[in-house]
Length: 383
Image 1 (cartoon, rainbow, N blue to C red):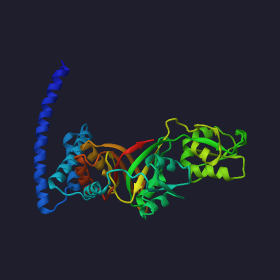
Image 2: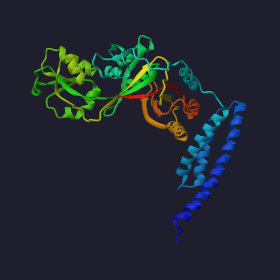
Image 3: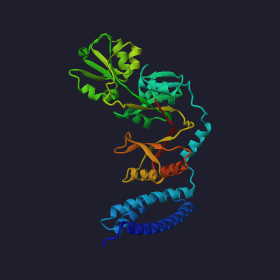
Image 4: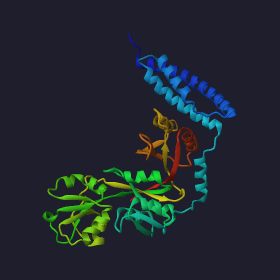
């Protein structure tokens, strides 16, 4: 006759107590290993040793439990490495940068800076900029690349860039540029986006033969556009540029997908409202600066990592987040230029620089990554 559930749980509790005691014993040995490595200048990670250990664990566990046992030991090894880094007390270069930013950042977020935006007056970037700042001076640039360059050169104190949309996904062009440019994120804004079909006053629906807009807006209105017949859809660099094009053109058979603000700004009529596929349509914008600035209330941290091109590299990083109980809000990967099948990984973490685990996280990541870039710690404004 099988044992009842309570009896089985009592046996599990007994085994768990034994496992905790063995874990404590193992970590005490790890501390001794850390001391030895510190005395002899050895790195914490011993990749060959870990591979051999995982292979042996699989053999000991047997065919049925091999994968389960190896998964458990991967977590144990990640925790062990983190513990050794803490014992070695190695100062994180990135954490030092964060401490310096905390000391140098003003107490209040600036309200009247010069800000770079892509497009023209009426662009969603400009709308987000006006929500982030009280009275900004906005300079408009033709491309996202020029926005990054304006901030890097010091021409503008800040830049505002779209980074992802709830319907169309990530703005890949911006992520690709993030690899090439030096910048810091100081704030982000989540802006509700409502798209409208704008035309010259008097234009009827049956007259529209071509629609202009940005590729993200077109993607966000894919369902509406699919229902149109014999209408050409043309991509341009910005939704506000599309509105400007319609307003300045002599043609009466064109329309733009853009905002209500652009209708008022360029004297256009709204032929159809809210044509986006989802009513819950939000675009997230980042506000970038040349140097790190960390303002009170900052609770989101962004990092960029380049990992060794070997099996398990990404898993090793994710296990660090898990071991330190840090919530991962976003993970994006983009191919590295000139490096076949190698990627840059972008992470948004639910973590403040004031959290005690932040220094441990950065120590562990610096030890296990080819390159670690700290992009900033900031808070997000809901517009």
